[in-house]
Image (cartoon, rainbow over all chains, first blue to last red; front, side, top):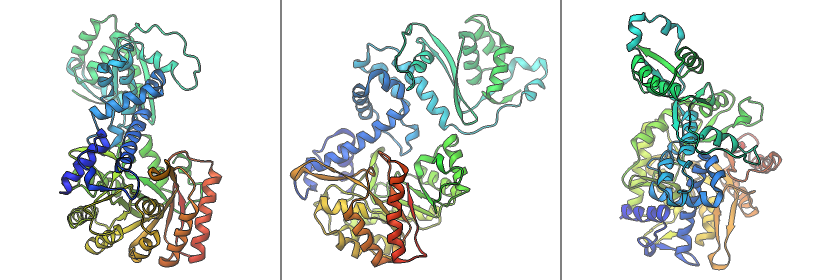
Length: 252
Length: 269
């Protein structure tokens, strides 16, 4: 009895379908539909606000009206499954890739992946970085098979569009967006150093190397895979990664 | 929140939305740790969904328990409503019918929460925009029954009582006079939005405006009846300049001082 009433009210709030509960509610005056619509409006507005806070660059690119329409369609296709909203909205990039009205903007999913990587980095657990001495102490014959543990804030991106450039020119302080070559691929890493979310563009082999290492592949395998993408300066990339706290530990 | 990290602003306590601090790390959690060093904290949850018929989420309750252990709050509160249904989270406080079945469900869920947290919690009355045909008692009787069955306290939101009384056509003073006085551990005040025209006009709880005169009068009426209580002025959207917030807080403090100079303190959030 209570259970089916609640299912019906959930249908109202998430999908704007009042049919199942209309006869069970009362309005002191005016229509019952109007009263139910308050819950629908509150729900949709609050979840749109959550997405809007997570994806400010997407919102700026498509405009408020388009964003609200996309958010509504996303919420109806994938409502939150838990009351922990900092984790809600990670699937927005997959939704945008299949969202027909956004077909003219093929770079949107890539930009959404960057914005979500920033959210994930912001809320990730705190972990001390790997002490470089630990790596220096690995015997040379064991280096090939050493594996790394990535800091929980890390995402490596390998995109067919210039996501970091698009992000940069769509910050609130930039009034007129300069022309951007939307077909130029960009790769990079997003992480949190201390309390600051940071993003660092990388060349293709460096990104491939860090992607393999942060995914837990042994050093030799990661290096082989990355070298296929072009010349790789391991010393340079490793020094920066250690300074950025990209790794938290190694297994020898 | 950032303003309070230094401990400089004069506030006797602060209230946080529990779910905003469930992340395992990062700047927000660091700020909370800093603020905690200067102010007592009240944890006000919106996601436990005490009204859900199939029971509350054990995972959510464990996350709340971990936060409570970390923050050691002076108060822990939740709402008389539900927001989880069929495995989905509706990010709003949906209303309950006031039936014996709902009373059993909410009592069971409150008892489970209090057992896990090893402390009583406060239950806040919701703003409501409709009533249910199947309800068999008024909201104040339902709250009174929850207090008797579970030993929980109440977070009395005077604005919510007012909003519901206009929307659902009952006398707010009847409600406020019937609430079990000893159970009230905290009071909320807030502004609301008057939305629509004629018969379709509805008051909507937005936490985005000054407290209206009718609500101030009901607050004073309540204080005279139950005595001073810690009072929070909620302001979550369209946040105004600080002097507007402070003048709202000063008005509440004046009323508290008239009732009892020692007890009760006001804070704006």
